[in-house]
Structure formats: C-alpha cells, structure tokens
Image (cartoon, rainbow, N blue to C red):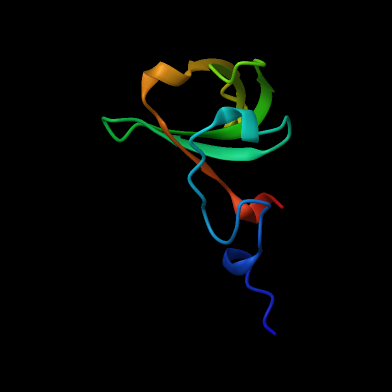
Length: 83
C-alpha cells in the first residue's frame, strides 16, 4: 500500500471532510474554513465553545488567533494531512 497523505484517514473519514457541528472538533485539529466569497482560512483549532457556536483558530503562517461564529456561514473542512 502506498503511503499517500491524501488517503490518510481522519476520524471523520478520508480526504477533506465537511464538519457541520463544531462540537465534533477538538483543539489541535487542523481545519480549512471556506467563506461564501471563497475566502479561505486555514489553521489549528484552539478552542470551541460548549454550544459549538464559536471557534478560535490559530491561523497558519503566523496570521494570529481569530474568532469565528457558526452563523458566519463558513464551510468547515478537516485536513487529513495533519493527522
């Protein structure tokens, strides 16, 4: 079997997996958020509120920590390359 990082499983499945409930995410998970205007934010989950409405992301490339609200309508994808 070839060790292809795109075929490496996450706890959500293979490849990038859509996460609709932020309560499924844990600190340390690597994610990609895609906005309605195709804005892309990638980083590591720092924290998620207990109700799953707010998530803090430590953005890649030293862009800092950023807060996202579930109603901001981002598609949230897990990144299997980080697992």
